Amino acid sequence: MQIYKVVVGELQTNCYIVASDKSNAFIIDPGDDVEEIRGILKEHKLKAAFIVNTHGHIDHIKANADLKLPLYIHEKEKDMVGDPKKNPMAFFFGHFTAVKPERLLKDGDRVVLDELSFEVIHTPGHTNGGICLLGGGCLFSGDTLFYGGVGRTDFPGASHAELLKSLKKLSQLKEDIRVYPGHGPDTTIGREARAGTLNG
Image (cartoon, rainbow, N blue to C red):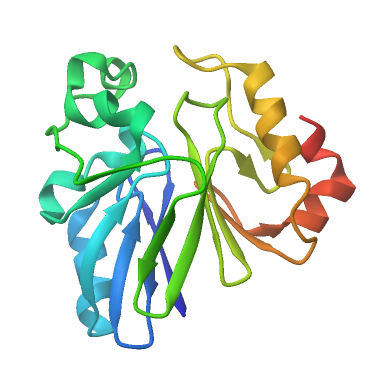
């Protein structure tokens, strides 16, 4: 597995391209700057198969339509990507082109590409349908968990109580799991446990 990070958009969102040994890839949270994303694919001779959105905020989904790939997202977020009028972030950060998801995910599902296999962990709090992807010693945490911080819960549909439950779930993971968050530098479960971040 190879992981390439592209920092996109005005909110400096981490978009990840996750590549298999067969040079196929999927894209996590293409929030903007589609040409930069395409450039990474071209540079490494990768063929993108689908997109996974960790949640439906506009800074994580804005380039979905431009990439013209099947979209995977949690079932509780389908309106966030399918109808700009139902996306609270569109009010703050502008319009986006709606995309109908190809696959609606739920807790315990698996996202598979060649030898890669990731478990879907439903982590509500920052949004109602936020997810993390766990596999290969890595956790793509979206805006649930950051280096030294956690997702905001002052947006419509957010819940601090639910976020605390989600963080407790993540605290059960192995300490050496490498965490790739939606913003900022990567970290590990162990570091955030020691720092107290997983206590909210």
